[in-house]
Image (cartoon, rainbow, N blue to C red):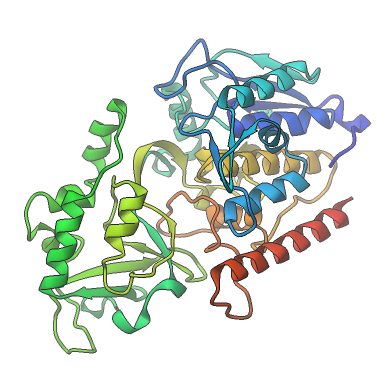
Length: 443
């Protein structure tokens, strides 16, 4: 998107981490004439999850998610193609059959990214652990969810420790429009506090069925280094349930202080949902941090009255995940509010998943380039998938949970379309038309 300019030749950016975000950012900067010092601590310092020393290693899966416009991750990938993403270009080159998803040859993907960055004259690769954010330099921190202990301490010191988290124990999030309003009621406990919760009432029979399904559901395996710390910090809802039939009734499903206006009575059990975004389109299940497999979450939590057809934009997770409270710390350009030369990209921002990492890496680099050119930052609004996720992670909110691409955060249509495929394809069409127009304006 940018041509090499004379004003770029003496500029230098430090990129910390050669994962997906750091690799994309380093490429975007270097191809535009900026000198990049790319720090990657592997192989000198390993992590609990990485297996190789190559860049952009896909740790959890070889799939980058859906690759069609009826899928928010597919829309984000198409936006990245139009913005000249190196990593999506390489993913397309080494893709393997996976239905409607973009899955890649894992080794081939990392190999090609590594070779490309090593071949670029503007990138100096430094294989050592950077323990502090360099001062008086432009920096992109893209150290990922397994940021080293020493760098984490320095980030905590830079940001104030209360804004840095090390474990992601998050509840599922659903869209408001997918909740059956006839089965729920809006009310705060004892009618106190700010805002109203959505309350899903259960009678004893409904609770018994839900309880049995919850305690017998299949869990996702935790790595050894995750389990002890996670359960110190936050008990999964299924573990609470296993302590006894009535345990949830004194915890996440407590009915006290809630009178169902439809019956005039206190219910046997109540699941509460709390607003998760400023626009009120998303709600999270309060107290439902969970380690159940995603398919099991869909099956079991859809038993909750009112959530039978709920659209889950994020499932509950419990895993090691170093991330910052971006909603309080970052501007929409992805730099710190109190230090405009320090940018964050990748999963450390709370943008979840491979494709979000690539997108935030590209956008951080893009805004550094624009700053060097004396231009205003490129801020995409929530008509686009990239703009919507950056808005979500940088718009201030009380209860921040990391989020990946989903249609729940993208700007809603003015009209109501019941058919999901038709609706999502129309949202994607609007997003790409908007992005093309925005990029043409910037040329």
